[in-house]
View 1 (cartoon, rainbow, N blue to C red):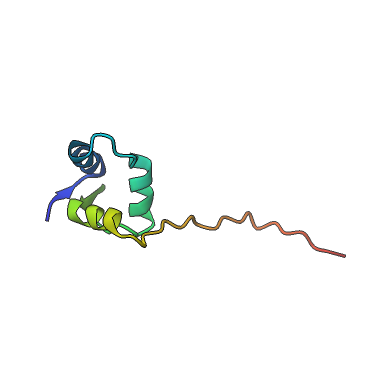
View 2 (spheres, rainbow, N blue to C red):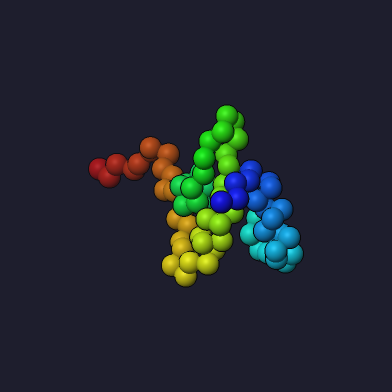
Amino acid sequence: MKMRTLNQAMDAIRAQDPGTALTPHALRRAVLSGIVPCVHAGRKRLIDIDRIEEYLAAETAEVTEPTVTNGIRRIEP
């Protein structure tokens, strides 16, 4: 188990694959949505690098966007 902060995890991924298309923003969204599990240590989120690799290697991995509604709907007469 290799626990790293988000930035350290991105550095490790870039060291393995310098041309990676994964961005820190995409990784952060995957962590916040629960797709990639994390452990909270104070204000830090620690991510297991092995879990990130499993997520990226999965053929069926889908990142779903949360549905955002503003609460206003049209009422037809």
